[in-house]
Length: 315
Image 1 (cartoon, one colour):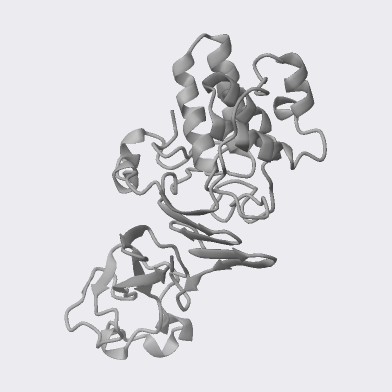
Image 2 (cartoon, rainbow, N blue to C red):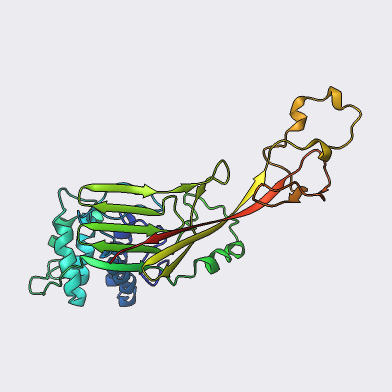
């Protein structure tokens, strides 16, 4: 199953596709008598307890699908929570079913239509005699903190598709760690491998995202590492950058026809060839004294920069 130990599906779509996957897998396990398939549903439903803002808005700030950054609520999770609450006799799932049901305003798609599901499966959705657990309003929850994202990405070349697949995307952020912090009306999300790394809700105040960008390339900084340091969360990433600007005269080849060349000859190409490269400090230091270039008409200056951010929380 393409799901992490903490319950996140590949697409990281809390607003749409979690609920689609959950209900489909529930019915698959039921019809094929495969109860082990329900474990993935349990994981995702338990994770979603911590991915809801106080208003009932679902966290979509890092989604890999079209719900990214859009407003969704828990309505489509109603049937999945109700089925699993009845199946497991789980008070937390029962409470979440009630909570999700409070957001139903219209008929959802047929797979998660609350009325149809309740009428077709009255016994499988009956939680009338089940206790309700209190829903958490204060917590700090690290999700996917132990998922081997880097190890999985290193195996891509052996998959055979060469990063080209039809009708989908690679979802390279699958399993990236996030932190959810809730203190009653305050709701915080700290994220990795997504354009924004921080979002906040406090009452009616909505800070949709904070992001960090470099000048020109490589552009938006997507942090790929998260480290918990007490009450602080350290985000890190190392990025590479190339030089595509004017070439110093001393590095140009000697040519007898230089006076007749276009002035654009003095500019490096926007995409230098692989055989034109040179190492130099990333801090704006001098050009290297030794350049290995088969085609001296072009030259590339490469560097590495490390970005980090510390996000602090107060408990």
